[in-house]
Length: 261
Image (cartoon, rainbow, N blue to C red; front, top):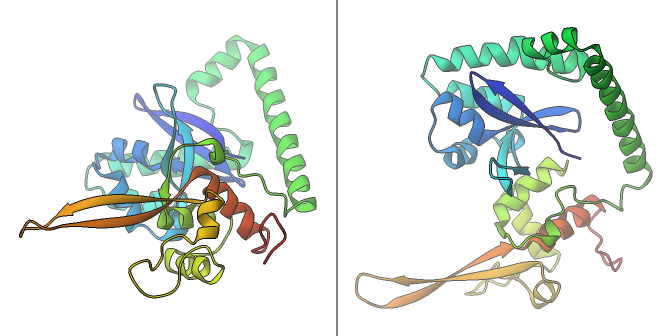
């Protein structure tokens, strides 16, 4: 389960997600602090292990998919900034935020401490919330160990109208503990009968079986060349249902819901 926490750094909000006991940072927010303009390009240049995708709520209350980075990825992003804010931000992360989270399970600001001192009931509420959170985590871990094949994709993307590229699906799978990259995922989908493996114009297009399951959509784009002729480019994209299906498929050992390998 993804647990959203919002930190304030010099008046700017930085959203983080607790995933499997590790803090992941919303890349767009980090880039905003560091003065880096193209978060998507930066995500493409990070190691696959350091970047993932998650659904978070933006300032307008919309639930959207965005890139997140783990601690290693965060440091790589910081190194890309030559602004003086980068060093200060890194010190805040390494000397304040992460040590508190590791020790106490939460980051408590000075203002929060003052609030607690003035209102002891808020301290009791905070400790109670932390206790309940840890109990919930322990229960979820036990349930996952007992019922691993029955995986529920935490982001509930099956109801989403959004589609993603297969390379982005590989990142989601990595974020759910499945060690696979884009090239290996393409090969696996071909071998398992989800993508066409015969070389030709329909190479890597969805198979009839995959389309009937609603796992993919094909986006067609008309390209007008300099001599005036037009060609159609086709891009295979994974549906929300497909994202959920493949997380469950791979965590279940490559067996679909009908029990077929």
